[in-house]
Length: 441
Image (cartoon, rainbow, N blue to C red; front, side):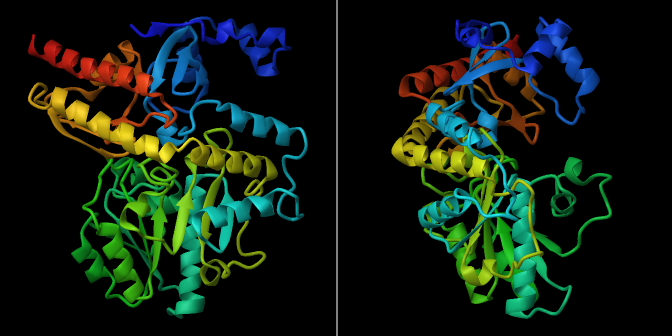
């Protein structure tokens, strides 16, 4: 069973502080059990997710607690949104300090936070301009707008003919344009008509990219350095480097989506750093705020980003002072706590341990793969129901969820301690072995 701990929400009544309205309203509904909350969700929450059956009430570091006080290691971490851990004290302190002073001005007015925050990010990642948005999907949409406008105004592609190349099995959001460039059935089924202007090629296939780039109307190649939602697909060494060289030779922008892979997750500040690639346009999100408030970023050279003029693009909340203050603190935590080094070391240990303990003992495991602390175990879904693994992990105090129905993801907060990581790895191995024992019965 998951471990009991007095770290539960009920044990942290915050010193008798006045209840928020949501706390008072929830208490008035007399929601006591997990089933009470499940029933509430079924009746009132749009059913576009199929969550693991748990009701989380508190999080700290690499751990979360449910309403019954059961403790779990969070091995999904908001799909890489919580690299600094749940409720990192420095980030929460920055949130509270800024929230008491100024939260929003719109960019219709200047403020004393947004500009310095953009300079901080530009210097940290080596770019001229930073466009701040709210979500990863917004960052992707913004990058596509920039690439198209650049193609017409700088590259001088004929009007309305710009093309963007993406890869099969990509994932960058669920907007209509993201659906239009997706090969995942659930993402595009019955959402047409679709946005035109995309060509899809196989991932990690330099030859396919070289062929697609023969079209003079290509504006950009939009790619993930590791396909996260697509199954934690790690390309061959040098793939991104060669892609960048080919793009430069054809005057095509390389857009690298680091929303899931960036910010120390793979053992480098950016996953593109493994191939020593500095993209023309960089996308960041998720852990840019340590999972505290929505913020995403699009970064690029001045000659690319400056195609956006007043009136051509915007966002009510994009670049708000609250999110900016949180983001600068979240980025500083990554650097101060050397989380890239931690991800590199613990990730290698994790893969080595799982391969040693599970290969040859669990025949339905097809592959253990990953980079840094972005890892996956692909299973044979014809031999085993992946949900059996999910529930066994939960029983042993590990929360995770598969992608593509067959790829178990293991993406813990990067602040997980060595002792916690060893304990969690033992529990994960135990879970896979237990499912195999039950399968053989």
